[in-house]
Length: 404
Image 1 (tube, rainbow, N blue to C red):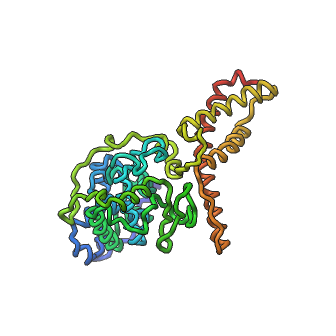
Image 2 (cartoon, rainbow, N blue to C red; image 1 turned 45 degrees about the vertical axis):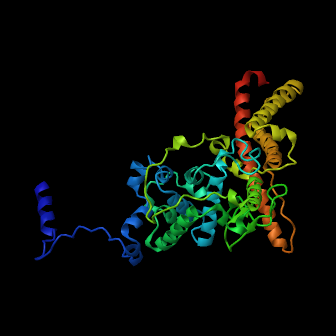
């Protein structure tokens, strides 16, 4: 039977026809031809595009690590391309913002994030890399976990490995970055003075006052960033510069257009991450300078406030609810609700959120109001998670004491 089966299979197996050949091995698709890439030179294009090998071998496994090996101009270009890939004017303002923060030492403001910094600066000058790559800007943080740049389909592609269609925008932005680094601070855009931070229009709106006595937030270009006045230090800096123009520092001259990849200090030279950079990065971005802030909040750091609030909630449950009223230990659901009710007022008290002003357009006012409410919820959720973790840990440790 076995021989019969083999014979039948050979009988019906199609014989190869004369001249039949096996299918050829597929060849890789060639890189599309780009006259612009040839115009600016392939070497420059290669430096614009981060590769997987560069991430692993030069960046120690991260795009942020690799950016620390690049020139200041390239860092400015990448961050601004990630923030505003569709508007060169907006990208120039983002680059100036990074330059301002490095001049006035934003990352050296300490754990108070500008509340008690010097009147006309946040701290000693830092650098473009410290300000641009340290995690203040969302696109930089979003590169975590990206190891194959050519497979990225989002707007981050224009930032880390521009396609042929994106090369022109990247190149123009790089030219602008060189000029911004080469210019004195007196060339800072007049329309941007007083605005030290920005948000995407999807999470913020113009016409908000983000600190006591601050400027109303503005949107300088259609669909552009919302620029906000969150701290007073830069305002005082510009006022002093108008009185004494010689205060404006002159940037180091840049002699060539071609970026260099000279090694720079490693991330161990960056300031030690604070509570805000590790546990709640959004908290740092949303803190406002407020002269009328309650004295208790003025004297305590946010870490201390969270510890105090956590301890008060635990003691209230142990002493009042369980001890005095003889009630059983609250469930996790009730504990979550209690912490949430406490976190929202705490976020309002510490966040300094500006209430939008009622203008002629009710729809814009409604949108701004909903935006502020969303920011409060996001800000409050950070406190909620930190406080809830502490409360649950304390309650678990005191399980025997709290048992009914």
